[in-house]
Image (cartoon, rainbow, N blue to C red; front, side):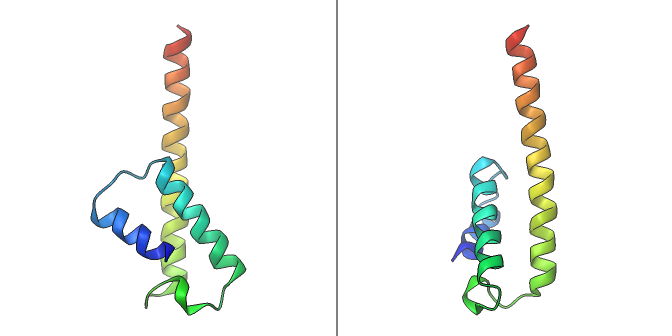
Length: 77
């Protein structure tokens, strides 16, 4: 269950890195393809859960992109 993987990631206080981004994208893909499947997530407000994931995903990707841009800048100097 991908939502369980996301919950475990949060409980272990791991950073929202590229691995986390891939888990979220896999979850969102499964969520869109199997919207009515109750097994995708535990008993939570689906709209709120997905909204928070998308907001966190956006922030993480922006942070990762900034890190990549900075590392390229310092590498080229």
